[in-house]
Amino acid sequence: MSSRSTPIDLEYDKFVPPDGNETEKPLVILHGLFGMKRNWLSLAKAFLRDLKRPVYTLDLRNHGASPHAEPMTYDAMATDVLHFCEKYSLRDISLLGHSMGGKVAMTVALSPELPDDLLTHLIVADIAPSKGALSPEFQGYVDAMKKIESSGVTTRQEAQHILAPYEPDAMTRAFLLTNLLPQAHDHHHHSLRFRIPIDVIGNAIGDIGGFPYEPGERTWEGPTLFIKGDRSRYINNRNIPIAKEFFPAMVLEHLDASHWGTFPFLL
Image (cartoon, rainbow, N blue to C red; front, side):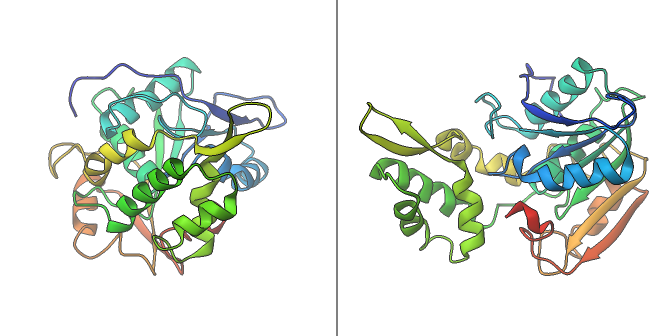
């Protein structure tokens, strides 16, 4: 990873157990591309109930309510997460990331800036520490979002109509359109625009498909769980050995799910 970039302050939700503990052994959750902390609300509450540990869900840069900033690289996003943990005095954390958030979590684990007492467990949902172009549908989503904004749509039905040729699955469309918000022009007129900076994300598609380390360059020896969706190709026989090079203690578990459906509540 390159020299540490300037961090931004991430927006977050905090779920605290009855004993009031906010900093000891928390679970920190990172969403995927086009996601936000709100996607994890139901499971965060379930983790709080079952684990009786504090749970933090973060909005990564350029997502949700967090600031818009460049660069949108894994280096920068990991630096934001490290800054968040330092700012709120978190230690002995378990870090869970899905998709892009999983790559951010792995970058945190492999970072030379990682404090010795920060990370105890790593959970990576349906992504591997490999490099390659994102699936073409992601660029299609960006193109559709740009078209929605330039069209000045005023209803979600209009936005759905534009997005449908790019994404046939209604649940995935609904997930993507959670980013759509009304923007008032005056008291009588408004249009819908995306809360995320589409141009910034579009320009970062190549970086999001990458990974900042080469196999053998860095390792993290702690307990690591990879969760593979069996109807997804993101974790496969080609990149599992790469994951083992970075994370020699890794365990791989399977779910009967697609990439977006690894955690169905994300949709």
